[in-house]
Length: 116
Length: 113
Image 1 (cartoon, rainbow over the protein chains, first blue to last red):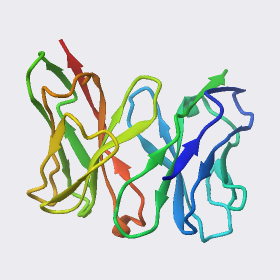
Image 2 (image 1 turned 90 degrees about the vertical axis):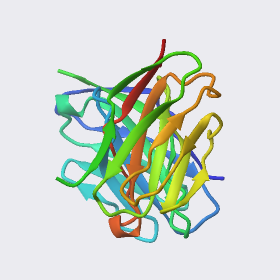
Image 3 (image 1 turned 180 degrees about the horizontal axis):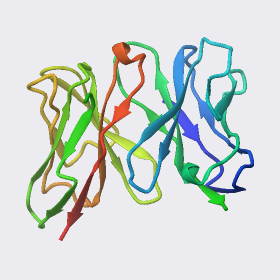
Image 4 (image 1 turned 60 degrees about the horizontal axis):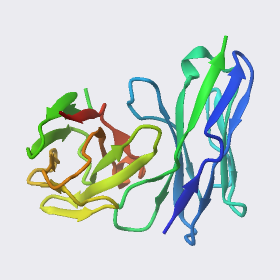
């Protein structure tokens, strides 16, 4: 079974600065997907960024980028130029690429605080 | 607009009652999911369905039931056998057509009174 670990329950960053959220995972599979989701106080889960394991290039979406280290099974999220609207819970998630759509495995989340 | 609609947003259940949470999607996804989130926790999978008239238990299926009679709909029933049902429930969908990305509805709060 796959597991996802987020070792930082809470992180704090000054507005406009850069912050990195950590995520590690454990799997015996070679083909899979990794995701970061944002959950603001409204509780809706919003997709931030997606990475396909067979792609070596790190995914980027505007101010959000990842550092994907497949051998180390590490998938960190970097948020540049932090904004007040980035304050939220951030969840790292894993999904197998094999057939049989059995969903996502989530970490326990990191609470990101943005200091004005 | 395309998306996933959950209702109701807030629901109160008396002890011993069954309640049903609705989930409808118009994204044409084959696969649909129900997750439970407790305060300060990540999401845990209750049930999932890969195709109409088929569904599988997730990690915490006890006390819950589902049906998948239509592609667009995947209702979740919280039965009286679920001893601690107070939680936030999220419905989701996603399959190969979405690049294996899973998208979520806005969620439903269930409270036992």
